[in-house]
Amino acid sequence: MSFTKLSVSALALAAVSATAAAARDEIRIVGSSTVFPYTQAVSEQFANNTGSPSPIVESTGTGGGMQIFCGGIGETHPDITGASRGMKPSEFELCAQNGVTDITQANIGSDGLSIAISSSNEFDWDLSLAEIYLALAAEVPVDGAWVANPYSMWSEIDSRLPAVDITVLGPPPTSGTRDAFVELAMHAGCEELDYVANGDFDGDWVEENCSRMRTDGPFIEAGENDNLIVQRLNSDKNAMGIFGYSFLFENLDTLKAVKIDAVEPDPETIASGDYPVSRPLFFYVKNAHRGVIPGLNEFIEEYMSEDAMAPGGYLTERGMVALGDERRKTVQENVLNAVSMEAPE
Image (cartoon, rainbow, N blue to C red; front, side, top):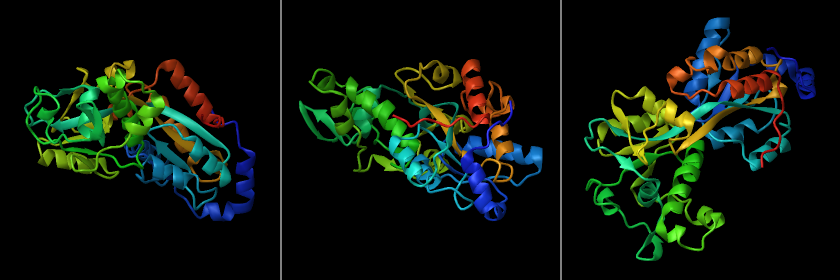
């Protein structure tokens, strides 16, 4: 496979800003903290293979990365953004408004949203999605009424759980991990509650009433740096953290997973969908920058290589769950040939 497309926008960019673009020798990448370690690994391999400068990779969060990526075309704007969810219609429109009209989407693999706790915690944690919702939501049902969350200890949610304070560190609203967690864990957990399941509530009601995380202390927004969450869990054996599976995978010497509905996250359960909080991972490339920013084509080729993406590749060694063979081949062909994405729905 090889690049066969140099878009009209790329030619235009090369014509009007070749001198400016040449001033930036490094590839610039922003986006998801979950995708960050994978992109960093590809960057190191790319630099080793080519002798080119290692790309500058910034962990800005998915939402923040989209805002920066969609800011425009040219050497002052990034070439790629990583994302732990798909691009939103509003983000696609923002890109278009700023002249970023030729974008390729790359689904690089899958990830599980892990809830982890210190391995020094001796309890065998296994939470249902409903229990996760009751612990972390701003509003919950109590005695037939929808009220502000009153729970401060896990044992108040279910007597089988320890009588310890609920302390969960998680991502901020700008993070794709937060978006995915709200959709896959909070909404699904809310729908499991008898109050909701037996009531006359549709998906719009769930989205409106079950999306807000509590702000009274038990849930702590820990920023985009997942390593800081890991440090906190190592210092507080009863605290839990929410982050992508790769961070749990890299810290299994000190952390352990909290099972969800009796399923522990691992590559097999995430790939099969048995683990209930799984999601695809992406990066988005600005096709106008291909052939203009030095090394960008070669970096994309490295990211799409079998050495990186295939089962047993160096990205799966870091915790990413590889795509199936047929899906992976399709993604590789589309990305290497700069196939433009359609507007998301």
